[in-house]
Image 1: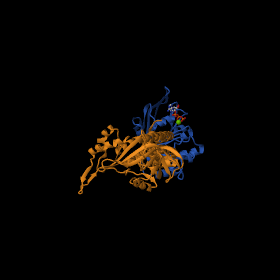
Image 2 (image 1 turned 180 degrees about the vertical axis):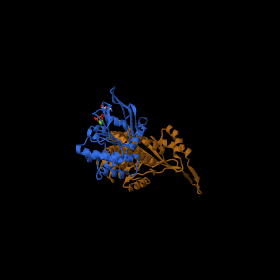
Image 3 (image 1 turned 60 degrees about the vertical axis):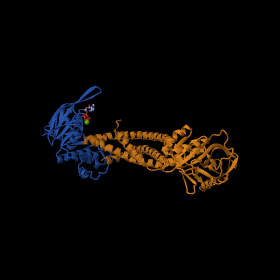
Image 4 (image 1 turned 90 degrees about the vertical axis):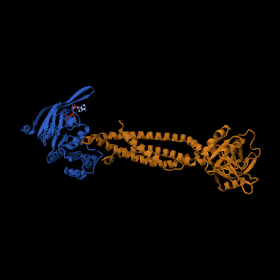
Length: 393
Length: 230
Ligand SMILES: Nc1ncnc2c1ncn2[C@@H]1O[C@H](COP(=O)(O)OP(=O)(O)OP(=O)(O)O)[C@@H](O)[C@H]1O
Ligand SMILES: [Mg+2]
């Protein structure tokens, strides 16, 4: 009966349904995106950091402090081999990164701009120095072979003047692989364009594009230059890095060294995107609110139309419950269908959202269907479609 | 055992702080199978009386016994159940559900009872009123006379003991009226239903066994038609 009766008022119900569809679609899309974002941050926090632990300081002398601190919580072991030579094993390895701002110029286009210059080298202490940063995640460099060339050059002596340059910077000055770039009076050959490095989004590199140099030439760092030193650590898998960080953290901070761990990065990234998700939730909420207004007006029309029908049904002996159910069932059914369509639509839209926001995010948002978001959306749709008709007008 | 007994029925509407007494102490009793009409000028309270008899509204004082069940002690849903069980309705403006087809409209009282085979019973009734082929049409696709025939079929669907007809021909032309009225009396006779007919039409009223006249909410005349015709 409920179904049959709905035939003639399908148009009204369709209006009602489309309001629900849009509201729920927005809700599901944004909640799914939020869920996926959180999941991706969780999954990729290590790649964001590129290491287990990152220490940063603004002068080179601090590196001396790490070793004794670390040695207390993660000591190196040494043992003598038969031939009396000493083998030191360290539970960690680390890469040192020096970065500072410098003017770079592209002779071909005569373009000049301030860029972030970075140089990576093995750490000096604890026998754990390595050059293999990033330990997690990867550089995206074109051509791919440039990374190998780059790393082998680091072990050569003397090193060749090779440089890796940020993609955006190269585009800005129309530079190609094989061109040269001048930094502090020295010319380097560009062997690859860097698309992505761990923890950086396209947007942050636009603000401070990076040029990687194989060595820091004499005089490039002048007195008073602001230089940042970062130390990327990778620990043996059996080490609890969070615990280590917690134990040496206070001493490090006292020495003016800040530290970052995977957990910390997760929290921090989560926090900075909490604002984005919050904003998006607000958008979804407004969409839903508008949807509700649509539902309310559609339902109002519908109810107006049905008042006589209910009266007739009552006259023919329908109980209040029967009459109510017949019409509630209709709106609930339409609400359910609307909500399901909305959830579907929302799930499709959320597949597109990462493409829209992709450049702003330091991570790749894996798009998966979010069960809670979909169920929540359908539930909400059903709820408003059942509650609004019950409201007195 | 009476099928409908009305005792000292009084109805007062109060609106805008003023009281309007529409029915003053109305009394009558109907035996099963009676045919009965209520006549009176417009606004005299006929529809109000019918509504009270069917338990659609509550009296201000007095009581209505339908099949010896006192209506004013029951709640809305209980009265609705009584209606579904014992009462059929025909209205001046048909009151078919616009969203349902003719057949489905006839099925409604049966479905509300949860009766099986509603479609079959309804189809038979439609055939009885000569609309066997029109079951799939919506009310708007039917003429007034046809709609009233559908509502006749609907009224008899639950085999009511009591049929209330409020000016069933009020919206129909003379020819259509006579078809509908003939059908009404035929069906009524076949089913042995007690008929309560409200009408302006004295000729129509004369076809029932008994007529009461009301004016200003008071019964001014109550007699058997045989006497009237004499
Ligand atoms: N809900 C109501 N509130 C106030 N007054 C009402 C209400 N319903 C009916 N009335 C009044 O009660 C009186 C009787 O109305 P009723 O409909 O019973 O008359 P009727 O005899 O059926 O008239 P008609 O022949 O025109 O159908 C009228 O004066 C009407 O204005
Ligand atoms: Mg009337």
